[in-house]
Image (cartoon, rainbow, N blue to C red; front, top):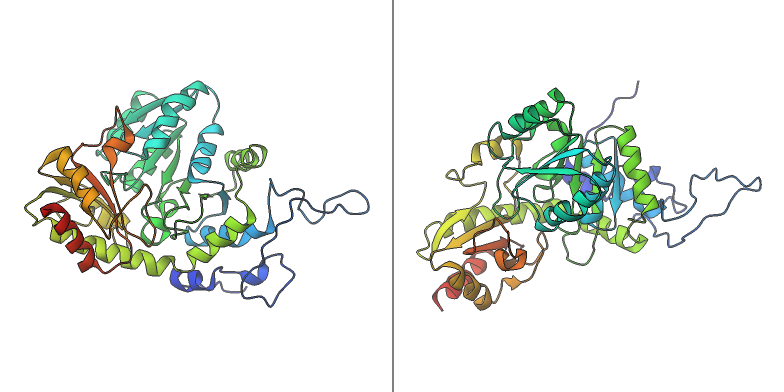
Length: 385
């Protein structure tokens, strides 16, 4: 029996794929997998498709390298990339049946929360929003009424609440519910939800996986090739939720530096969180890496190599000071998104609108790879202007 060799994630990322030579590419000596722009594929003379390729809406050889890499990093049985993070996330819910019950967190990506409240209910799903980061909340909700799926987002955007994946996974297995985790902020380098008992893990690959703010993509990975997973795969093909081959190639290119970017962002975010705690203009710093943060102990158990590159600050001057501070920064850029090499700042309450659980004095910070001292000086001058 051949012994399997395990490599560190950073080695796999630098190579761009853990098994490049296994991909169905013609240029076997090519260091970078080629991009296949063909939308369709030739049939055999007897009208069969023995190559396994039929049409690029269902699959494309260019997808294989990033999908294999994501599956390896997540220790998954399979992974698929999608046209966006929302396409990946909604594919999970669309794979459910009308009448199914779903549990989702109150603190989560606002666009998906809004989709669940509108389209999710239109498709016949019964969605309950609870504080999944509160100990025992999911167990109590499942005991009160069974659910087909529990959706977690941890850390939860933009308050960075931390849900205990392992404990919730046990509750889901007890009550025969699937567990899916949005691990966009943690990335596979910090948290591997499948190893903690989750059934599915989702990434908005637009964010950290790509890391350069030039590709829209999403990803799902599964712990087993189940009937539910095959339903998701079929939905991806039938609904056309696939990226273009050029986007898939750029996603792979971005992932080659994932370990370098995430490491730098984590270190800078922790340092900034510690410094901002002492700033007289700041009322509160929300970051899982701070011992004072409510979810810190859980984060220490399930996050490794860092606590993420995202933090939020609440300002003593309220909404007015928060908005003016964001307007005065020069190095931090006012833009929606996260996980890129550039540092971004955003007043989330005004973006999310009515009904948001986000305080109006909060600024969300996505820490890039600039010098952390420069980032701090830029915030300080914005506070004081």
